Length: 491
Ligand code: ADP
Image (cartoon, rainbow, N blue to C red; front, side):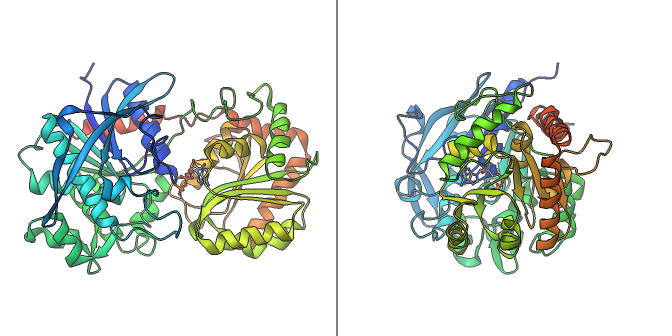
């Protein structure tokens, strides 16, 4: 047996403490799965205002109080506290960086929940966080075998390790995972560079298109780079537009680049154990979905109509998720015998469009604006189909949650959706959903109609549901793939 690795896993959001999207779920499920296979892993994130110390049993660590952290020519104090993430099998220690100015006084992860605007000091907030990660290791005298960083918010940690403290971290390897290349952490160069305290000679390594680019730094300095699905891996490597020019940087690292398809945590997303849904069920009792459907429609003030399919959507309200298609197709879509429930928050024009749609089709459309984890579970349990018309999708988790809940996904052929959803049987298995290729309203409508036709054919529909339920999308496979990557860095 090779010896277990010590790993520090850093992310800006980790379920259940802070979540705006899929990153939080990955930063929960993957570390727990790595712990399950024997590794000594700890996670670290900032402690934002709404994270309750009492509810999350957060406590102080004597050695990690009031650490002076340099940010440009000033110094701010960080106090690192401790909590844990747990599932029914396992527990992983979670370090949380507290600081009033950057995190405690802020109620959003990246943006002000009231105005929807990104915080102006986001560069400083995540420079401070990255620097605190380093100071924590130094003070604990804990230099893990591996530091795993995720997305732009933690992408400067590798630079501090290699350029500022190279001796201390000389035995620590670094993996950097790209969860979404659309957000790169791009800021006015001079001002941000000055806040990092990096030596002048490395300026070019963190500059992209004349701006300071956090993500470029992560890609360039990590020992290994990963992303969250094989197809997205190809897309970002080859598509300069999608990668906003970072494909050239990625190409230089192609020998140390490995896509790994995300998994889902099957203790959180399991209809047989889910305490958040009205009626639990499993593959031999999927007919109980109907109770959940009734409860779901009630939550959205819609009348339950047996035999009418319900489509669900749970999403950040951003154009990447394909809302322009929904806008274009809305009237034709709602001419069909279906109901649509949408849960999301984000861009105000998309929120407004959805609310207007709901007013125009009060019997058919239900909309809840906001972030509501329990309701997300009820949607997965109660909907018949799940609509994901994404323009691009790094991996996507909801299509996999849908499989686990016997909800049939209707998705666009892009990114991780290509790697998980099949309309035609292939070597990977029988059909498990509906897929449309072009980012066009008519293509989406045709796929929706195919899904409704299948819904009317009881046997066909049961086969689709059972196929999804039978698939293993748990973290087990991905955790082994990450373990292999980690170990490969030591040969
Ligand atoms: P992304 O990371 O691009 O937002 P993913 O599909 O990878 O997309 O993950 C989104 C995750 O966030 C899923 O777990 C989804 O259920 C959840 N989610 C998104 N919006 C909301 C919301 N408004 N309320 C509750 N959960 C949400």
